[in-house]
Image 1 (cartoon, rainbow, N blue to C red):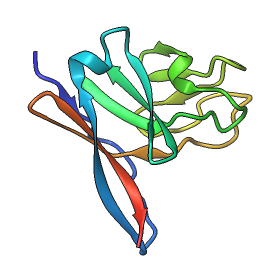
Image 2 (image 1 turned 90 degrees about the horizontal axis):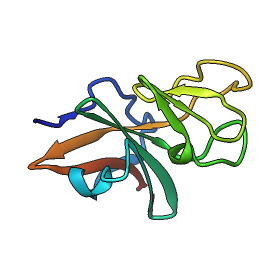
Image 3 (image 1 turned 180 degrees about the vertical axis):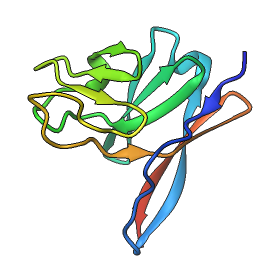
Image 4 (image 1 turned 30 degrees about the horizontal axis):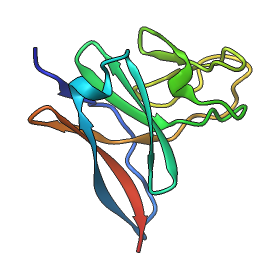
Length: 124
């Protein structure tokens, strides 16, 4: 079984940002309890979501309310916010239904030798 990296993510757009790859951990350990995992990266809360063999990363805080998306339920490529049941597409962060009005920010992901890395912006 081979884990693939997410193919469709938005890269940070600001000119002053430098991309830093953060080692999140081994795929097996991150997703031992299920298809969602939340972690803190330099003060930023990021949710990791595994669909089939692909790993995706979004900001973990719902854009509608103060809830952790990684505490939600997966529905195909959607993650349901546990607070108000809004659904985000983990492939691109798009808000898919009400009460959501803003998309979630995506982070690029790569998997090398079974280890998940997340791209995080670093201000220069």
